[in-house]
Image (tube, rainbow, N blue to C red):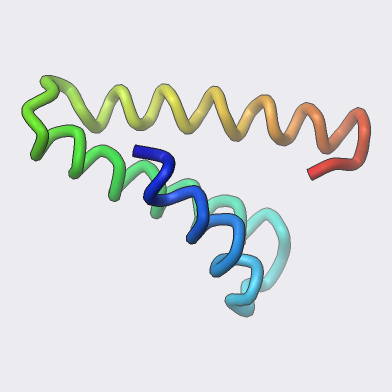
Amino acid sequence: MSGLTHPIVWFVFPRVPFGSYDHMVVGAETFAIVVEGALLTWAGLRLGFLWSLFGNLLSVSLGLWCRSIWGWP
């Protein structure tokens, strides 16, 4: 599912005028969780939103950890 939301999060959200980087991250992750959760649920996966929440929390945590250590992404 992230193949659908990932390009939007990486290429569209940085161009949207948010107040700060943190606001952009919250907006992008909320978008990804809602869209992926809806698609997973629609595809018949029980607890699709929880799986989406778990996957995106793990992903954003690792991304922010890398950013704090190496300054990337």
